[in-house]
Image 1 (cartoon, rainbow, N blue to C red):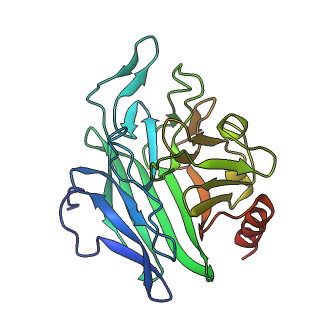
Image 2 (cartoon, rainbow, N blue to C red; image 1 turned 90 degrees about the vertical axis):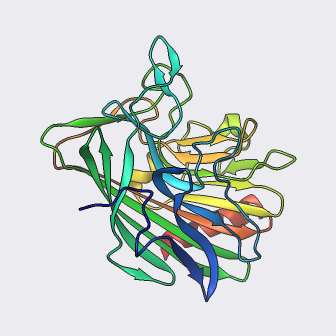
Length: 284
């Protein structure tokens, strides 16, 4: 029998390490056991680059996979955006239930998760995470997931945008960065600033704060077709959107596969250096 998410597991929590140095912790947040997340995540120099359950959005959990609408169920947390009503408190939250961590090493592991709501498994996820040191100032988090519809009927993934809230196409891989005195800067190969990169596709995207930078890279052609969800002024966060403009159908037995590599850097590299980090991440 599967344990509930908040129960102690013999193989969770977990850590990721680069050359013996712990750079990320993984598990369920105390008091927020709906989904596992990475937190804290740090640079090699020890600077924290994630935030967990911040006051502005208690359902933002470090680095995770979160979808606000899976066949009408909320796997993001917080209120559900209802067309014609706006954000609404509903009893429709699902959980990502830990099933197993079949492969593990100091620098990575795989995990099996059941996405369950109302006592039914809607999706089965195979998740793979690994950490690789790439220089004295950088390391890469390789995060891939396969979401398979294990039911007998087609379901679809949605977002507040697909339910009537323009510009709010979040859902999928999401990284909540720390809120600092000044908002972080954000840029891609072709644009700079939240308004120039949000809701657009780009091979890579960089978010820079006080002495740290995250270079997000779509590591597959399909992942690169997903627009980026970006916030810097209200709060610092970056996601890769599965359903930015229209619902994503998942037929019975079919899978959604995505892979994001994030280069975690001490310092604030320029656009040329960030582009090099991105090229090298995909080429490895």
